[in-house]
Length: 500
Picture (cartoon, rainbow, N blue to C red):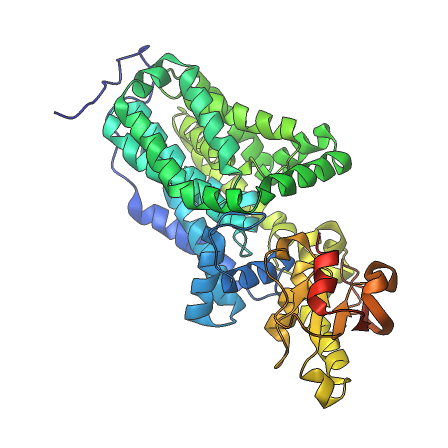
């Protein structure tokens, strides 16, 4: 006999325990398709993002872990390379598909929370229109897959809380393991979920089963290869995030952290998120989710992470808010909320999506306001400049020369846009486990490294050009030097001394 708890095994819930209505599948799929079509139409508007270049290189170096993320995203990058070659649209189609999945899961969540067709469609619309979802799906990063993973866990948790069916613990463990292998921000999220369950009668009731222990063991088994990689390499991700969070704390006030969270939800989303949180809190069945939402924001607030780290919890709150609005006796309220969410998305779309032509976007200052736009400009030109410096060497020297950059994205750009060049190495700590492809090179084309930084590693060093781009847009690469270093040892020894 299956081990199942009734919805009333703990404190009697006040709402949301009735048999869920049928899924409004056709309407929800239309919403997901429209959103995907918008993202796809704009997916090649500017260029490769800084992070995308790094993820592509990561996919060429498949391993069980990386300094700043687990292996799921690199595996997807490698799959994109196999299916679409160097197509940026092909790469970003994975993010777009993840965004469509989040929209569908929001409708499923609305159904678990007691919402009918109106609530499900409204949830799909407000989540699809949410700035953090729209913007995340415009680029290939860990964020869209993180959002999808969190929503998968949330939907299963909501169903477990509603039904008390403890057979759901195993798929919940599987989803949790997948989340942990997608992004390390899943760790605080899952801790927050556990706190929500432990803090409530309903949560503790469904935890009191051997299947919850098996779920934890399953999640641990899934993430074990990555943990083994971390142990073998001295836990580099802990050092990376500790340094990264310290930098964020120094640059961003805690008030700004909270303000940015509200902004990335949008004005309609912020109101819906509050209404949704209140609805979850007032419902004894789903109160664990309300506690988890607060806890995950609080954890990242204390740790000092970036404001978008806890943002994947937003679809939960938006969906609960949509259920609340749809349950209103004012029938037009749901329609007006949906229209308002879409109109806000349209108004702010230039900030969230690459809707403007590149030069127009630069002229109005959006590239300065949103660094993600500036980070998509100038990579082919950078690679061409590095290649020109490499080709300036005599043919005999080119055959044994190497390339060394100061950051991961520049190395990725050289590999993607260069022609018959050696694989670029980088002094960035993210490249610390990828030694130079030509370790014995004694002549090195450098990018972004000054003579002072290279120091005694170069017997001679000369700057041959400076990075620029046709748009004249200042970004992190603009103005950096390209030089030629005749090493005092080898490229591998130079790289070893400089890698951070």
